[in-house]
Length: 396
Ligand SMILES: *[C@@H]1O[C@H](CO)[C@@H](O)[C@H](O)[C@H]1NC(C)=O
Ligand SMILES: *[C@@H]1O[C@H](CO)[C@@H](O)[C@H](O)[C@H]1NC(C)=O
Image (cartoon, rainbow, N blue to C red; front, side):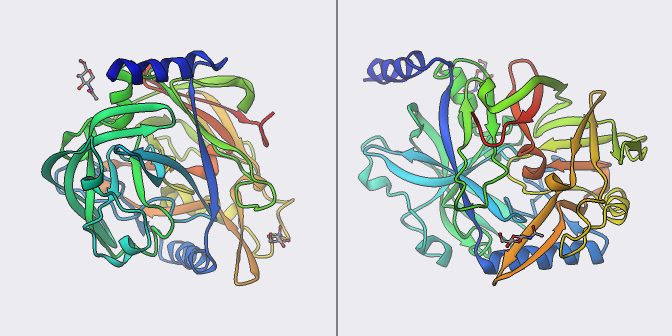
């Protein structure tokens, strides 16, 4: 059986020209209520000198808890499917490079959030194995709780047997935020995994189910438009030139916790701001929507690149560069201005979010989807680096 499954996976890999597994990501627009909340939160963040922000285990002390959950501040969330058990049960998940665990709701979950989502039923899976260890991820607005279970977990043709994941029996306070997703697949490193569970992708690499110890994200910028269903994708085990133009340029990883890199500088209108003279860190985070940064460094950006709510000044706004490993990655106003339509009214706002973080983290940035939809990204664990290239919109 095992070799048969392996064969299926290998044939699937061998039969495509590029040696990677293509996992489609579907952009889903948020509801009007969610978009209104996004606008309110952005305004709140700007008026109060930054909101508290945490991702799981940021700072890596045992008591650390995340405060802002996934893709909270976007027009769009990028969903993909995973299949758990035999026969397979399908779940809509976010592939999140800012956390490291896999969890899905359990059939035993009675929380309101669980009622409206797919639930895992271990009793109807022939490959289920109990584990039972407590599984808890805290969020600022609540949390998920449950226990660990083991079963076959698949992404596309890649099946990982006896994979340990969180079977969630309680979802508190986040039903609204997590409106459309059933669960999460963490794509960061084992060092920040709850209970030290090996991340799913690492298990794939160890079991030689993917070609390379690398995955890539292509996030379409046109994701919010129902009419232009762009094909966003996660490429497991490789990369593909069809998603970008020019060369991929690389930035070394500074820590294998999040996908953490160093930011050299922020330029506004081509001029250095010296914002990172004392050093800046950044997590490359598919699970966050905006570009979040320390409030005192983001405030001047929002000031100088002040977005009129009707977008009337979009042609006068400056470009903003993030300088990474000596290279400037430019965001034009079109890249960093969000146009959010809720209840029939449109409002333009900046894609930079001021945040407050625990002091020990220093100047920490989160490069979320606003950046990653402009720059196709290779998460190259094998070579300890992240690669960026200008995304093709839409792909060839
Ligand atoms: C993969 O193998 C390495 C080296 O043998 C080991 O340290 C690591 O824990 C393994 N990870 C998984 C997910 O099995
Ligand atoms: C914002 O989006 C709405 C809905 O797609 C559109 O009608 C409007 O023209 C856009 N506004 C700007 C300034 O681009």
